[in-house]
Length: 275
Image (cartoon, helix red, strand yellow):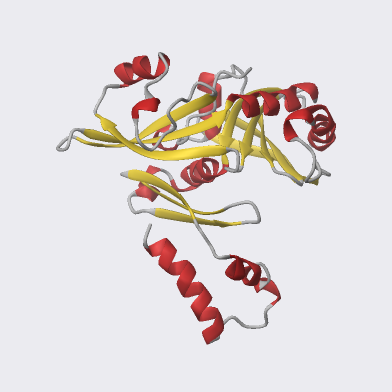
């Protein structure tokens, strides 16, 4: 089983490959994998002397599993699909960094008393530390957890922390899928953090002096991620079903510059403004 899910936000917006190289693997190359129900995107990523390089990108449709099938019992079936997809990029690299959507994870924005890095590591390593907060479940014994301190308020004596939890059974299932396919999973990441870390590669830390907003609207996830040098926030959007049906067809509409569409966008915009 892999050590833990990856840190949500790379320190100083460093690319995820730097974290993998430091914490999980001695190798200079890794396969970055975006794993979804019906497709896999993969690329060979190398990080050397401060330069990140992406080669052999591949986007493969997969069969996935049916609505009536259990994901946890379908690891062998899915591993065959993963192997076929990853074999297409023609690489000898076996280490993989997996990016998932947030459907099986929980993300919490917490405020905790100021602690130094070592004290916080010691407190969280014993277990039970995160259970004390009102926002989290009473017990996280069956969950893998990972956290990042995003800001510190010396005046109030608190730190803003992003905590990510993923059930251990899902971590093990995803790990088994890739192991059975012949690959070595070194880190599991979530899409909102992967996207922000990727922006960090392009923009650098100075690019986050003002907030960056990522609006994600897909079949499985509708969310807004806001990130700056001072903090991070991830929020899921609650879009009414009638609006979702219409938004799913927006590309087929000749023009959205009508009062009808204005009302839909205003409802969506008001949610985002309230975050």
